[in-house]
Image (cartoon, rainbow, N blue to C red; front, side, top):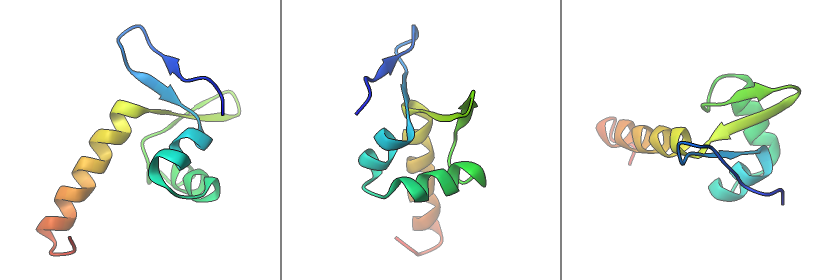
Length: 72
């Protein structure tokens, strides 16, 4: 697995493989979600990159939304 990149503000930038491992899913799902805007992501050249802080906030918001909708 590639080295974790730490931004000057303390945020961590992750690649697709790292996000897939963190979420316990395959890389194909991460690519699909990144492409369709389902995950907070950005392109750096040809590669997708993810802010760990943004993913944690997204996950928290998804959990709250599911609880409100009675899905949790």
